[in-house]
Length: 417
Image 1: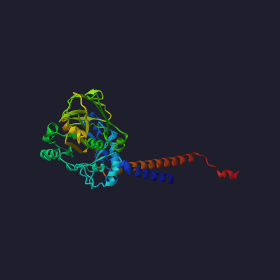
Image 2 (image 1 turned 180 degrees about the vertical axis):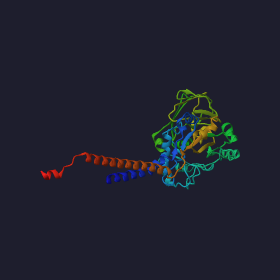
Image 3 (image 1 turned 120 degrees about the horizontal axis):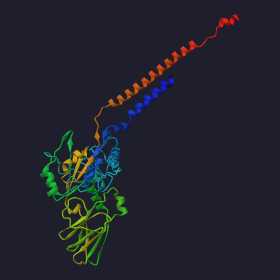
Image 4 (image 1 turned 30 degrees about the vertical axis):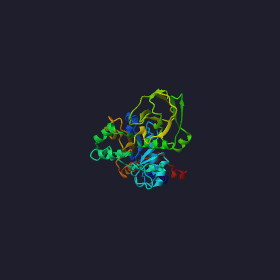
């Protein structure tokens, strides 16, 4: 019996340790968004959206921000890809109490854009049109401009004013408030979709465009004074400096002496002039006699001019894609259900969203669930003891019965003999 009691104590202790292990609790704190592994997610990626991180229920930013970032990154990578440009996410929400040391830990998990309005001292990016990022750490405190996309809260006048000032305008969107659905401002949506001359982009695309501007190398030559060859090179040095950067099209200004473009061929395919396209793609257009060429790394470009020229100049990279002076991002904060957050924009193919994903937190039961589990286990153990005691009692009775049937030695007969 002592051995059985010791075994019981060990079993109960083991049950307690399992019930209160953080990993077990973390697994029961949230449920995943099933839409991330469906055609809905693929469609959002196709139109140019990006998946970033918001957080993981049960993991605290104040305790270990690096662990939150790592778990959040794994949550995305095990279900989908971050964008059509890269499998790994680089955009993440951070609360306003994470210190610089915490942001450094987050960056070791591959996240280069931390936002927004997190109050980090000393480093800021795009809090206004003059807040142009200089250092990588500036992107650890991405600003918020242009207001909300929500009807009744968003302001078209405010958004237009910020866009007119220039720079990166970072709006925000929350698809639902508890069980209440949030309506989008149709005036803002229509203006962005059809009227605004802006680059509609995401956090990761904007950062990658900036990163490529800091490190690039290209080859170019003029053939027979009429064909200009150009290639943006993907060098080892640039890969090492910003390995997280998406391989996106970037726009380069080329002075071709006011010559008309007879044909432009990218990797063997002829491209028509694309005009004021708002979303990232390879292509070209002419503005004020200058060629604006948008192309990804290692793509061979042949620019066939109408007339011969003696000289040309690679002027440099534009601040934003396709020569726009302003860019607009929309961050979908706390995205727990991709369908509910995005369904209002299925007919708006130009809008680009940075969906900051988080699993949906389960209803908290405190210690109720572990207590139920321990109670059931305790009942099971007591039942086992009852069965053991019943078996022992039965065996004892059977032993007494057989003892009565067994003949005993008659000591009196032995003595008379």
